[in-house]
Image (cartoon, rainbow, N blue to C red; front, side):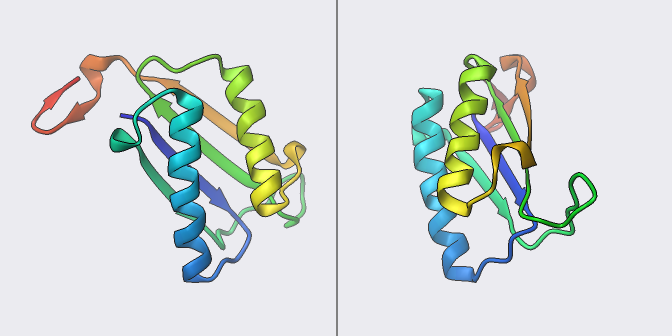
Length: 112
């Protein structure tokens, strides 16, 4: 049920993308307290993304889930993770948190 989308202007090779995406899936599921078997993650690298008028490394993150934890805690985790993995400074990251109503999240022919 959690969905993570990371969009960044940093160019990555296909193998780097796969490794980073697998790591993001595991670590964000853990941070959310959700089983990774429900986690969906997407990475868009090399995006046309400008922040504060420059094309220095930046990221836009969407994090959607049923029963989303404290956004402040998750924002800190996401920014630290992006800094450690892609060297993106926290001040160059925007994060959108969406706590989904289980009736509005579909899966396997139904809803949660």
